[in-house]
Image (tube, rainbow, N blue to C red; front, side, top):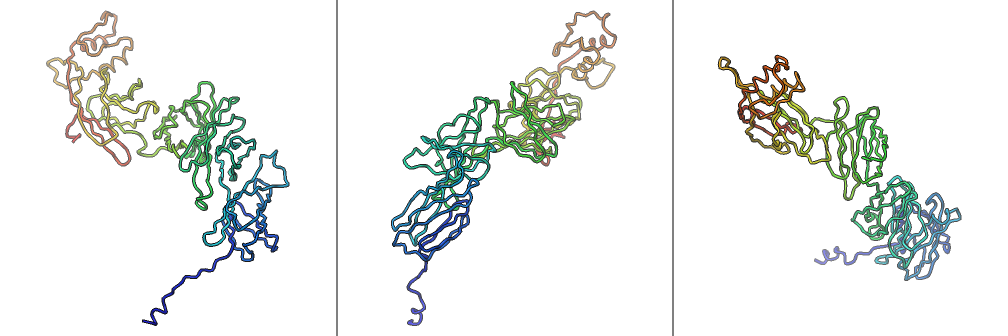
Length: 487
């Protein structure tokens, strides 16, 4: 037992450096201690240990940032036994463009185990908008320039309101907003009255992973991005009645988009084409296929919103992208399908199949179907989910002579023939007798025969079965008069 107890340690002794300097900046710094003729370079995110200082005495420590905003900066502070927080004012001998280039660093001392000195900036402001931005604190005349994606190191002056304002180009200053709203995304609006434009800038504030208790990462993003994920050159434009301004978009290119109006709808076309797509929303998350020239289809995906910019992505059509494929397997019925509240109708002949996309993607996406030449309200096509059903559809057929034994002729076919032969001779659907005032002698013989046949019509009903299912990646809506096919 005595030997075993001797092998169990009673104490954990740790040997720590008396002073550790941590660089929590995105730039390298050089630290100098003149009293002991000591200097060291600390790279971004790194630290160094100093073993030669008596921390019971005061020491002057010089800090130099070799390059920030294109010029070097220098500053100093006194390290004392009771120092906890301090702001280090950095100066430069180079031109600061009227004071618009400034650098203020913060100092935090933690003496929990040893003397850890953290050099940091309370806010890193990253401009990803592609616009030249200017930032200033409330009740302050100092304007910071944020150009490019180089982080702008920002700190408030003491006893000032902790809010900032923003402007783009020569716009007016935005409303004051806080940089401390961690996890909350905001929208900053800068109004440019000269250009009659409002810049909507997305504000995203997070904590630094390297220094979460000391530094906020403030990212400024465009509220809209447009991506061309095709191999063709495109042009896009917002819905604007005052101007016709097309923006070129090369293959693989991603550009920020700054709307001029509040329509929030967009058009697109191929660069060498005159045919323009239907308009579509850019502030609603959705996906659809746009009709382009020469029967081509272009897919548009709108994603994002909330914490991320709205991203409008154009890509090539793939199998399954169309909202629905409609199969008309009826033997003798012409079917019509159309989007609700829109006049444009698509006609399907018997045994015809068609890929359908919306006539107006910005309107309610509800598809209706009915028998051709039927003026009653259509039936809702529930193609967005698997299902099946049946509808009783009425239509008019022609009474055949007794000696002829054949199936009735559907009025839809007869009406189509009438329209081809005589566009000026309309037939009122649903009536059992003709009200045409034109005399039979004035009509061609073929038209007279057809009108005589229409006088002998009767109203029939037929059951149309429908089935909605997924075939691979494509939604399919099938119509048939044969119950066995539907089953």
